[in-house]
Length: 168
Image 1 (cartoon, rainbow, N blue to C red):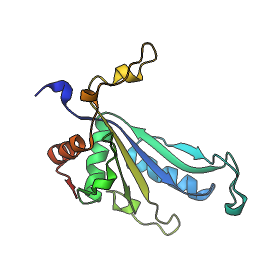
Image 2 (image 1 turned 120 degrees about the vertical axis):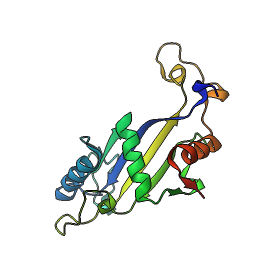
Image 3 (image 1 turned 180 degrees about the vertical axis):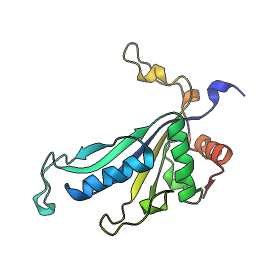
Image 4 (image 1 turned 90 degrees about the horizontal axis):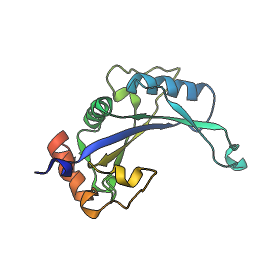
């Protein structure tokens, strides 16, 4: 097989939506740092919605991006937490996939604290093949050829072979 046709993990984005600023957001950032080992970045409200008590620019969530070996290690742990099973709807047409973890306490080293509560998190994985740089570069960016794009079926076979994940 051509090594340039192999599918690999580009990045893993971990997101925790809290819905409010203050102590809950600080607790979520602390938990996200413990789970991933990266410092999270805050996400803010894009518009003001008075009915929900939201103001534009108000911090509501936190996220972090993992790349390389730390991304693969986190993905293995996260897939074990969800039982190595994903639905076919979790994978989009470009081959990227997302899934949610309902409780952060499912991760190793995490325990329930009544003062903090329980937070859920979303894991989004971006997959790629070698050669994707031609579409992302600033100078002479080109359209990615069809043979270099990752499809839904490519991701299903990649997850089955590399991580023993059952896609239903």
